[in-house]
Picture 1 (cartoon, one colour):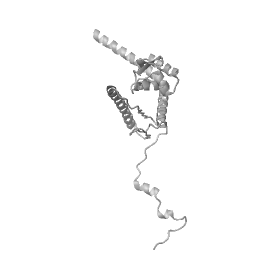
Picture 2: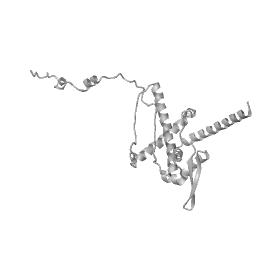
Picture 3: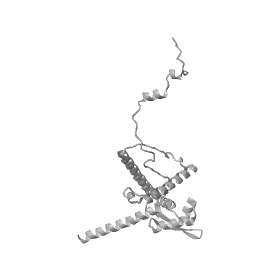
Picture 4: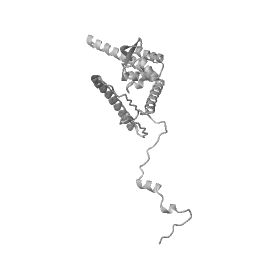
Length: 239
């Protein structure tokens, strides 16, 4: 093995180790509901502990502590500062997105997965409920909400998860493209949330029944005239 190949292997090893540390820090961050929320906001825009505490209605010192954890984990970075009431307000933005791709998820321990799910679901519910209560959920045309229980086979499940993954990747691409345009135009953006859930239902296994002919449905739901007559009485002879 030549020197260049050895250096290449060493570099890849260093990158892999750095990625592993980032993944572990990201998992730790996502397991805490407030930390997860702060990381998500800073992935969307720049922010400070003062601004986020006011926005979230949470004590400044609590937000500041969680941001310090994220900073030490190198998940957020300092991007600027400004004077505020005789003090210095420091602004940060995320260096990693609160998102684990399918290749990373199997490496997460089951107890940690449960914490991540609970943390994310809590943020999802609070965010959606706040948008509804403040009457902004339907303020833009196209706002969506649906619940679609379905029955699929193994192939269908794989197809569904592939659809969700493609949709997530497309959403992130739209976010990145929009950020470039907004920066170029020095314009304000539209703050929005895209939430997706796809999971095995807790109900017992069900089978898909055979198709029912439309005529059978009619026969089952529309009684004939004879059944409308009083019990024990014969229909009147109209002849």
